[in-house]
Image (cartoon, rainbow, N blue to C red; front, side, top):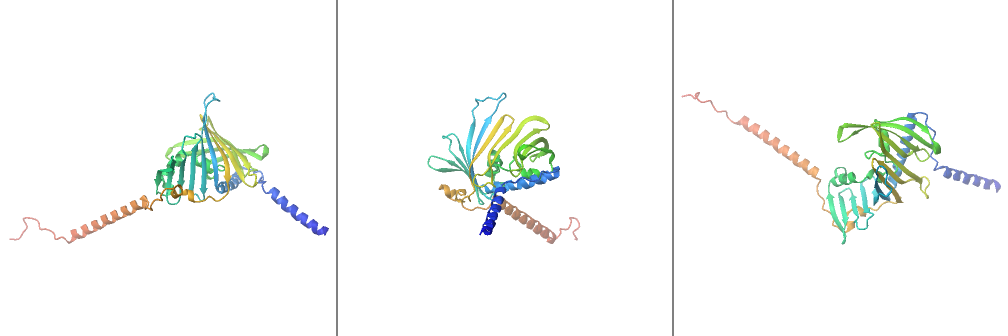
Length: 340
């Protein structure tokens, strides 16, 4: 009996030890920059997977223009954005609500067939924008992504201070180089880096960023702080991120807030109401809001392609017919050479 009891006790103790040590993700301290880059890549891949698992959450965006010297009485402007995503990024829904009760909410939605923008009215929803285009070339999509810091909203764990990059994408960029690192307190690592960025819309504009980031190797190497200078000039470009473990699921890391300092403005994103459940797909369509579904229509790009192809075909056929007719036409004799 005692022997059996001891075996069971040992088994439960082993299981408890495994569970207790599961959240601890600290790894061996890297010995060189190459090893550090490998550790970062592994950790950031895990953070990106966590970002994809967080299906729904609300974000309170607060923008506070700052002055030199800083004015503590300066009013803040904010808006609440509820984001729902169904991966792999085929469906997207963002509901933006200003803190001002008089400001009506705006809903931006996208599904595999179309994208739309809705505005709330007193009697219901009004369609403000609509497009049949593919998501990657959708005009509504581009306009919305250009005005909303969607990288920070959709990827709170793996986003960077560069709007064009995720941390994992940045690490794979050849222009992003790690130069030095050192271990800090609480298993955090200070990493120095340099990064040469060429703007996609203007290849002649090349900017060099130098800075440091503070990564927490206990939390999958999540970056808690970025500090950068542009072209080796002192500038106020920084980002801090507040990270914590989920109360019910210790192996899940949550981003509670992101604060970005950009020159004379400060943006704060406070995340709350995380949901790990699968998001229903009904809100991604107009019928959910009492509006008629649009009739299926061919993409303008496909229509243009086929019209162009037909035009070239007709032109080619016309050239062939003209060439054949010219060869079959009898040649006229020159004047003055007619036989009497």
